[in-house]
Length: 329
Ligand SMILES: Nc1ncnc2c1ncn2[C@@H]1O[C@H](COP(=O)(O)OP(=O)(O)OP(=O)(O)O)[C@@H](O)[C@H]1O
Ligand SMILES: [Mg+2]
Image 1 (cartoon, rainbow, N blue to C red):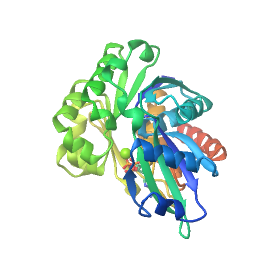
Image 2 (cartoon, protein in one colour):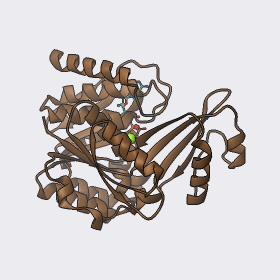
Image 3 (cartoon, rainbow, N blue to C red):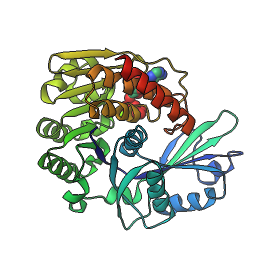
Image 4 (spheres, helix red, strand yellow):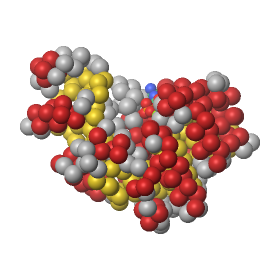
């Protein structure tokens, strides 16, 4: 089986189930909103949250994907940047626990984090996010040696905040003969980096993951036509359409992948884990349709939980079901 290394924003997900909404009021966080907070506020909130019962897991789009590939049994590595602090330590520790080899650089700022408050009465979610050291990852940081020994490279689209960084990663991947995949991240990322992303996809990328709005921003077309356009400029195009499933195309081969039935409560991480399942199938040399089905199955499990982490028991079920999908395929 092929191995994979990802490069992305190292953000720790901090999930706090609160007894009431007092902390939201204290930090001026409107319930249900997502706010960017500055370094000082990020730290004050973290110090205050620490004493509560928290779920702390390595997060960020690419890191989520790499967690999935590692838990499915692939040799998996991750390149990112954290701060010299407790959250940076926890990020590294979380990755190691999941079997990932972290190549984490240390920045000047504090570690990036996505803090989520879950408050009564309806388990409403309020986000306070801080990118911190994650955003300090730069082209000059990337050493070829991080990537040596891996067959595949997965790039997080959000990294285009430094186009030089994305280009350098893609250049290294190409030089080392790796299969390069990219997740287009979000429609506004695509809109504001339109020419750059077209250049990167056409010249370096083998596998593109886009959801409906990203595919539209990239091609100005509806999903199926967008799929055709993207497949013309890379080896494999994947267009995800949420609860309706996804499309996969390579050359003249095209598949509509059905969603697995799910009691969806939170879509966070669906795309990231779809990519993990798909890339795992690809790493095993499976048919594209099977790769898509594995992605579809794992993402259907993620939408049934809050956040992007599955329990150990759920992962046992997932690996058993994936083996079944493969043997039936
Ligand atoms: N309600 C649902 N039921 C079953 N499967 C779902 C549901 N929502 C999403 N999925 C699965 O997850 C895949 C990816 O979802 P989506 O199209 O929302 O990607 P995305 O926008 O990249 O996700 P993310 O918000 O994590 O970035 C879908 O193609 C589908 O297979
Ligand atoms: Mg996505």
